[in-house]
Amino acid sequence: EVQLVESGGGLIQPGGSLRLSCAASGFTVSTSYMIWVRQAPGKGLEWVSMIYRDGSTFYADSVKGRFTISRDNSKNTLHLQLNNLRGEDTAVYYCMRGGGYWGQGTLVTVSS
Amino acid sequence: QAVVTQEPSLTVSPGGTVTLTCGSSTGPVTSDHYPYWFQQKPGQAPRTLIHDISNKHSWTPARFSGSLLGGKAALTLSGAQPEDEAEYYCLLSYSGAWVFGGGTTLTVL
Image 1 (cartoon, helix red, strand yellow):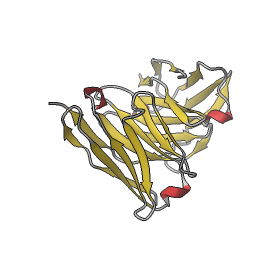
Image 2 (tube, rainbow over the protein chains, first blue to last red):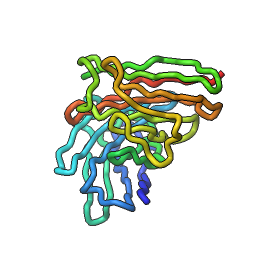
Image 3 (cartoon, chains in turn cyan, orange):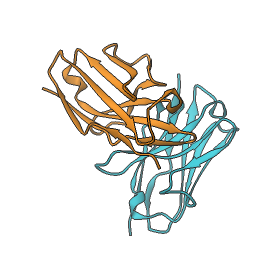
Image 4 (cartoon, helix red, strand yellow):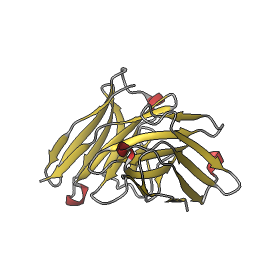
């Protein structure tokens, strides 16, 4: 059974950094494309970043240069490094596997 | 960046049929966009109904179907149930970048 469990969210001051993790089970992260999606309070879904099986990465313009997606094959885990955080980054962050398997999300709140 | 367009809101009668659409500002939606459809209810994570135009998951009710229709991706609900009242989002691929539609609020009334 495919399962994704996000962690690492929390309250962080503007300009700060966080690393989100998405622990996978039931499949190998390196064999699927993986996506990070976020949802600001009361807003729609926003695509954030993607990593393909070959390791190529892509980012939304809103996070390019500040966020970095990566995977740890030894731990079968996807990561999202969030740097230079802004108030508008406040959201629930979800990971999704290609084919449409979702985690439950982790909340990031950027506030002083 | 491309803009993905969905109907902001739709209403369907119980037992009725409704089609939600997903258009792209760059031109017709094709299989190269790998269209997804998601359902989200308040306070819950999104749930995938359809991937790659028309592929369903084991949890996708049979009354939902996906297709390409008139240059758009389409999600058709046949025989609407009260529990289908939710927000529906589509997602399209643009050669590495992905873009969500703004969502459709579906009311079953």
